[in-house]
Length: 569
Image (cartoon, rainbow, N blue to C red; front, side, top):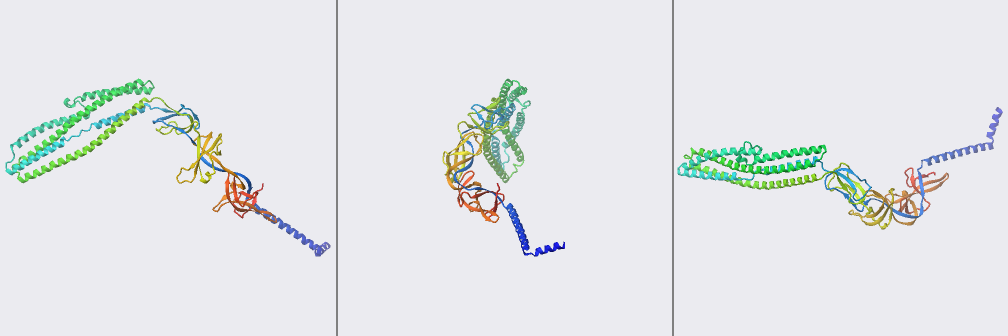
């Protein structure tokens, strides 16, 4: 064992052996460094953004302009009705064809409850009008009589004043006038009570206690009206029962209408006579009230002055004259003011009566029209075409003039318009056929028929109009691709690879650099000017050549100068 150890020591001391050991160690060290460098490079590559690329090419490219617009019919027909009805059934569907004369909708006619409601409204309007006619006519007899009496009082006061000046006292004529006034006051008071009772009885339609000289023919006319009203109510009850049980109500309805006409005529005759009689009684009562009041004042005034006239001084009598003069002037001023106010009110009342009369006529016409409408109403198409829209649902109520549906007429075609920048529109020619991008239901052709100024104020765009043929409906949106000319270009790149910032358009090109461990790849920005584009590609001008690798996608955000790794296929 000691001999073996000694031999190993001698081997180490041998220069040749020592050089071999050192060489082996260096080789091992360099191999380890190479392995570590390779692993480090591999880890670094895994952390780099992975990119997808496409090669720039040269060749022919056709520019396309995309746009979207609403399909409109060249001519359409709006289905409307003139009255408010209830939608019962809808016999059409959007997009389906209809022929001229086809039944589009059925509407429910007016029911009996609505007729009854309309009749009740008419009766209420007629009653309101008749009541307005019962207003007392303008009568100034009371005011005129008051002025006349005030003038007599003034004259009498002046006579007292003259008597006081001469010391003669009250005259026998004044005593006689007092006695006459007192008898007349008693008679007119009794008549006043009778007239008031008569007016009250007429207002309540109760004529049993009214003297015939005041009521005239009113009791008979009221009895006739009451009987006619009872007959109408009985006939209408029979008609309502017939409608309720679903029987033949036409004869019962005719009988009720006839009795209603008789009832209305009797009511109108009674109301007219009642208004005339009451107006006359009111006029007499108004005049009589003035007379009673004036007579009462004269009697009271004489009795108050009877014991003092002989002793009244001239000054006292003069003061009474002044008071009577003022009272007379106040009555005259009050009458003039009342006349002015009544003239204005009369004009207002006339306008109100005219409005009430027109409302009655309008309601009567409405009722007659409702009575003529029976059964279901059919709404038919006036033209053949395609249903583009339906604006109602079953049980909806129609509005006069509002479209229930819209029908595109056959053979008139469709159009679609899109707004295009002026410089782009200059590249489009009439007659150019566009591609349809979003229509898969059938064959559709779109041809440019017009290029005109945009209707929006201040817009610099142009409106491009297309004529459509094929399986389309109005109200839908359609996407178009319009060819704008083609040419041959030196550099064509994917459209998605062209970016834009505040400076210019640009693309990211892959550049490679050699290294001891292989090629390294970097993203380099190249500014370009886009010449034309189609759906997928853009022709650009710049430092781009066919065969250059253009970055189209990246697993991470990159910028110019960033190191990247190519996507492994």
